[in-house]
Image 1 (cartoon, one colour):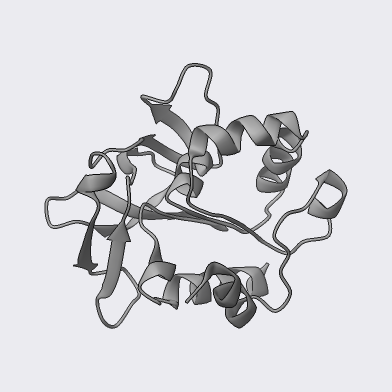
Image 2 (tube, helix red, strand yellow; image 1 turned 180 degrees about the vertical axis):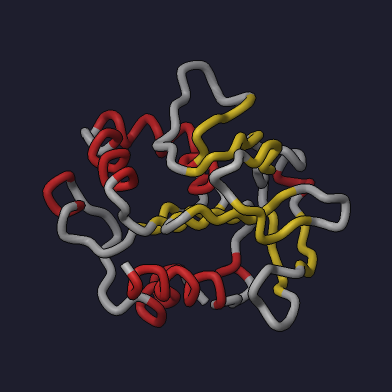
Length: 180
């Protein structure tokens, strides 16, 4: 399922991007996978970094997948020179923690609150290397690597649930929006 089709199916109303003025009108934000350093640079170049930070600290529900998780982390290891995050999640993440593109993999995960396992696709994925007291681990790999976390209205996954058609994370996010 394409990202656009996925958005149409699960988001009551969605937009592919918003400027600082539109940010105040949205009920939730999904920060997708991609290249976290480029998203960071573009957010700063287009004047979105501080408005997003303010929205997060103001309680806007945000879901970050892969690069989005990196951008939600309060701390990042091995970022490129000068790389910043939006913050909000009391975690430390390491970029490309599982290797390069050729090291991408799929696996089944047990996720807190899900009745059955979920199939997860990791593409140049980050890893949460430290979970602070404000955040909660909701999924790990068999070796204990933390790959999904929650903190209040924030949700972050190191993997791409949309690749396998997994919808429960987005449903969880929409429930968070509904409760906000």
